[in-house]
Picture 1 (tube, helix red, strand yellow):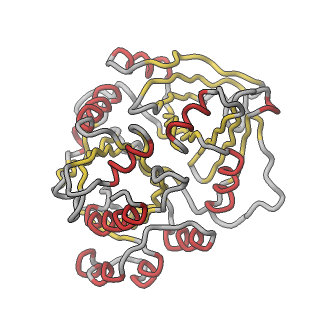
Picture 2 (cartoon, rainbow, N blue to C red):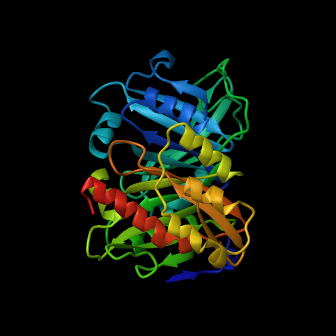
Picture 3 (cartoon, rainbow, N blue to C red):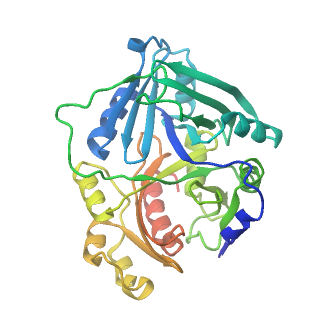
Length: 377
């Protein structure tokens, strides 16, 4: 079952770690140029900045892509002995940095480390002719990094050290498909979920929003447990998953095996029109998990009235769920790379604050069908 903690709890104490949102997410990948092409042409992102040999960087190259309020950095190795190459050799494509916008980097780093976070890079300034940015890093689950960023004194394309990329002449002028990042899900080892929930409560002052037990998130074969932590204003939400005992291996077990440790399982991208977005993504070759037609037979009774035609949701494999505050629509891509690890969620909210509890059975059965094809169930 799921239990919800009232968000009013977040207002009962001083907000010692104000967060203005997710600044950017950096993925370390095997081929940054090809990954950037994929995100541009499949997902409609625009490349806005670049770092690499041409900007004086010798060991890595990075492409910065933007759409709506989303900034994704795709970084690849330029030599076999680099940190990026070693990380990719172990984990494959995956999220390395979840950067958080804060009003005061020094304050955020000091609060975090005093409360027990491991500091990786003390506050320091990056500067160029466009201004200055202050940043600092702390450790998160696995080898993931949380980066504090204050860019209030900067007017460049992304960060100092990156060159702006002019808009391509053939750039698509149609409406954007993606508007923001709704949440980022982390997978951790068995028994570690509680520790990481405590970490976000202690280090960031977040509160536990929802707790899903293995009874709520289970099928005939596998199960997992999940807790969602959120900042006081709800701008930043981090679900944390761990595996649970089942007859076979869960999707979390599969992720942990092939990623070789804890990491970010998926990024949930918000959209204002999921039917249009998913339709275009499918037409561009993005593969999504398949939902059986029988799922849609009970949608009217389970969810009630919604704006979108059921036939469109059925045609595109979009799931729908309702809570006390509204409804949401969501769907999940197949893994983005060669390993069955990181994937994307597309989500549209109509007031709902939940995470699609009513969809869990259909979703996890779809994931298990994919696992079975791979021989990993």
